Image (tube, rainbow, N blue to C red; front, side):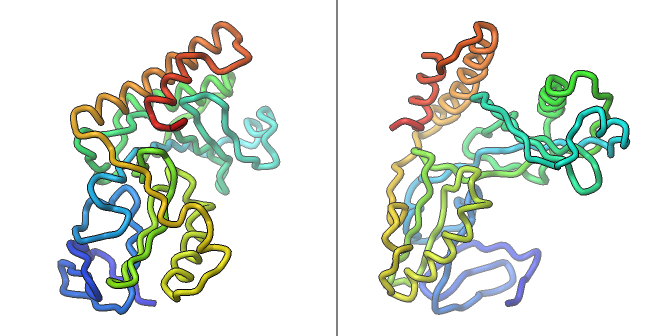
Length: 261
């Protein structure tokens, strides 16, 4: 396998991908661009119209913590950490003894804008640092790094695998943050689809799953921003009231997002 860095694809057609460094030819082409799916053109199965949008996930990492700090925390097993909030976070202890913590922060840019060089707005860094402080209120830490990237999200938040046997173009998209576990299975499924074989993988329900189209702007921007705002209010309400069940406000936010459709 040959990897060509600093190469941007512009158009995908039958047997060829047009790039800024010339055409790349291949009998079978797989398009697996997730949040960047809109950066290429072509008659691509599963990407007609606006089926995938980029939703940002932001991360912070602390400076390395002292051995005493880790002893006080009691995080010797390096377990992954998360919470059950609607605006959830996730964290882990890194190999060089930092805490890396992530969350949505500013989740979506108008007209499906991309995160550029990955710079994180200062208010998002502050927000994530505040969540870390709430988990470990006695911990003294400094933020060393912050970055963000784009997830690919469909209207119903479900992934889909597609293959056009005429063009021999396959598409996998819409992991919505579950790509660590899903990409390997998706790759094997695409290979089975391309071979024409009928296997247990080609019978899975995400094959040719149609998620629907996202709304046009500015409805899309308003809806996504409103959804996260509603989830934040629901988290505050559930925490203050000690609610044992998901609030009606959060259920409404889920309906708005398409999570329960």
